[in-house]
Length: 176
Image 1: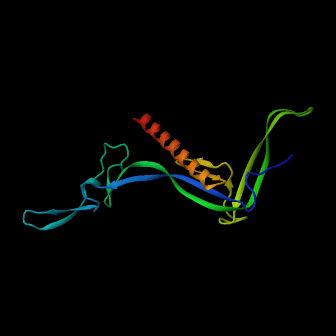
Image 2: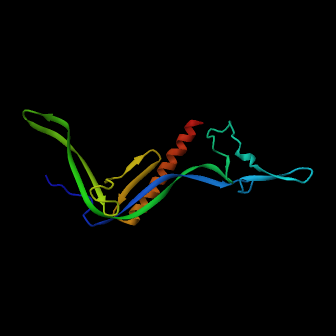
Image 3: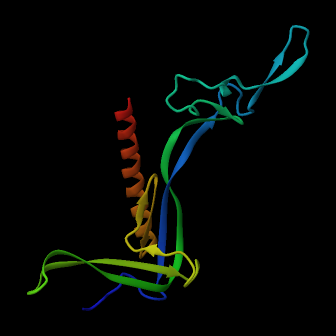
């Protein structure tokens, strides 16, 4: 069996991370101040919390439309949150977990082996740092991948943002 790796020791690769970010706008009621100045008929001034900070029970998301320190949440979107240049310092490949049709006594037929490749980077620690799965990972509203070039990382990030935003929009449509 010959084992080849995706990357080489010392190779520069690019990690790309996609995450969910909050979209906010300046509160139109308080113009971003988070409070209003109420003036009585006698002319005295009182600072009051922005009325948009009151919880609206008709909203599906209790934070949507609420003023928080002059900002109003209008929803979420996905974005490339980080592209980092890293240097491969260690590669681990494991092969095993036979699956498929096997004939114990007469040899194996149609076997496939599970293969897992992880790398460690000088920048994040060798031996005691993070293990990065080659091929990336998606979890919840986030995803990351390793790419050979910055251009590949940017392209993967853009494609993943679009796919995750489309999935989030479809989920929101189903919820209505």
